[in-house]
Amino acid sequence: MKSILLIGLGNFGMMTARQIREMGHQVMAIDQNEDRVNEALPFVTNALIGDSTNRSFLESLGINNYDVCIETIGNDFQSSLETTSLLKELGGKMVVSRANREVQAKFLLRNGADEVVNPEKEIAKWTAIRYTSNHILDYIKLDDNHAIFEVQVPAVWIGKSIQDIDIRKRYGINIMAIKENGNMSLNISPNDILGENQTLMVLGEYKMIQKCFHI
Image (cartoon, rainbow, N blue to C red; front, top):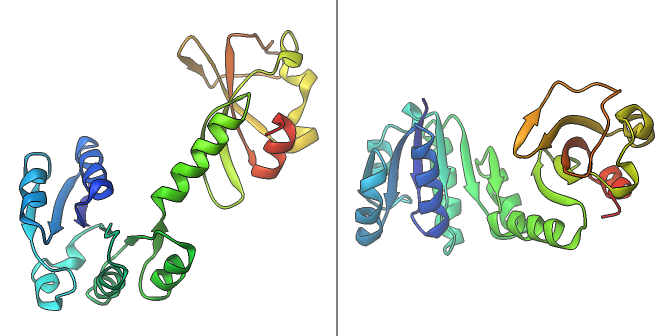
């Protein structure tokens, strides 16, 4: 179990706080808006009304006691930047900040953020990939160049073995698992025959997955 400090209870912050708590971690939530703090109280460990750009207020929280500090302020970049910088100055072990644009991400990284998330960009990318591709059902970004995709078995592969299609040699793509009827099998072999009701969990470079599955 980790101890999380989450600053900013807008829509994204609220959903993040809920998810973290559901995963069994402790969440201290901070926002200047009393109504948002009251709304969050039932599902976080604790919540306080406060100004995260106020150094004294942040010091009172004992920033270095948290495993992760997540800043999700989305409508005031100046406050976001100041908060990020203070969190790191006060001993934040891992500072994760929200950005709405690439230029914001660059400033946040230069001023204390260890990681930056851009929820709108990620959702837009997921939506574009999911709904403009014939075979893609889901994907998990690993870094700027690699991801894990869940893909339907293309019609031309049905009845062939993993060895027959040989996408590892041709595209550098690894088949990690096969899903069928909601069940996932990690115990796969080159001789496994692919069926029309199956999906594959594949790992590789974006550009090679795009080429292989005609995204």
